[in-house]
Length: 146
Image 1 (cartoon, one colour):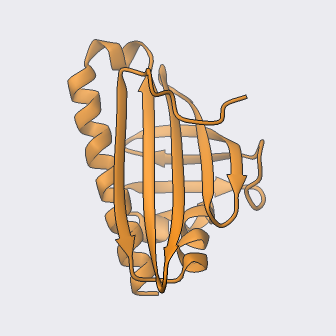
Image 2 (image 1 turned 180 degrees about the vertical axis):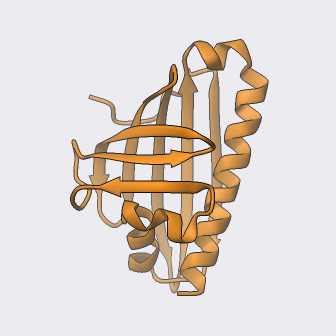
């Protein structure tokens, strides 16, 4: 069973942001997969058949990639871990949310492994770093303005 990102993977990126919105609002935006394209312009399609739970599978598209992710663990409204394999990249993505009064500290960490990653570790790290920073920025904007 997968319980954390792969800290030994060749690419591991971590980011944090403080969002001035209630915990439940941030959690809802993060876990309502079907709504992602409404606030996350880098995601062109997203669908989940039901509310997320351990073992749930959801599908989404970003940067020309169609991705199928599985929820490995979820502890509403504080933590969700998902991952999967897309085009030879094995990704594991962790989100943790901590209430800070009316605000929320969102921490995200993701690991990537696989042949495409090994072929260009620095390029893949830069791409993931940019992606996670953008995702957090879009999440902050959506949560603070809804």
